[in-house]
Image (cartoon, rainbow, N blue to C red; front, side, top):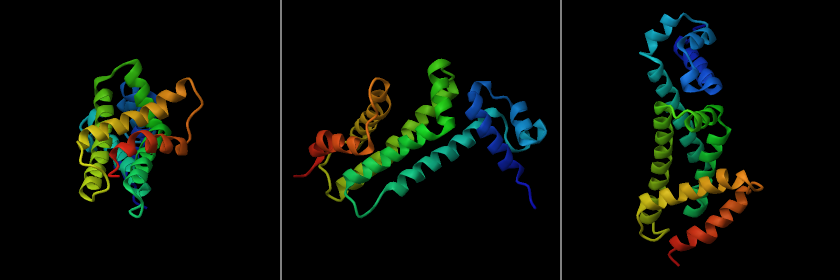
Length: 191
C-alpha cells in the first residue's frame, strides 16, 4: 500500500485550517495531525501560505463542480443560474473551512484570509458572468453588461441567504427562485 504523504498533509492542513483558522494553524499542528515530521511538510510545500493556497484551489474547484452539476442544459438560463448560485453558496455555508474563514475575516481580518475570500467571490462572479454571456449569445436574455449582472445576482443571493436569516425565518430555495424570477429575470427577459 502506497502512502500519499502529500495528500495526508493536505488533509491534515485542511482539517486544521477548518478548526483553528489560518492564523492559529501552525505547521507543527499540521505535522502532528498528518503523522509526519515538520520537515516532511517542507519537502512538498514552501510554507504555510503555499499549503493554504493549495487547499483553497481544491475548495474552489469543488465549489465550481457543485455548480456545474446543478446546471441542466435542457433548462433555461434563469433556472440554471439560480441552481448554480444556490449550490455555490450552499457549498460555502456547509463547508467547515469557509465558515471558519468567514469568521476569521470578520473578527481578525487576516490579510491572506481576506484575499482568499475575495478570490472565492471573484471565482463565483466569473462563473456567473460566463453563464450570463452564454445566455446573451444564445438569445435567452437581453444584451447587458455581464459583469454588472453577475455582481447583482451574487449580492442579492448573498443577501437573501445570509443577511435575511439574521432576523427572519430562512427562505426556501423555491422562495428565492420566485423572488429572482419576479424581480430580476423579468427585467432580463426578451419578452
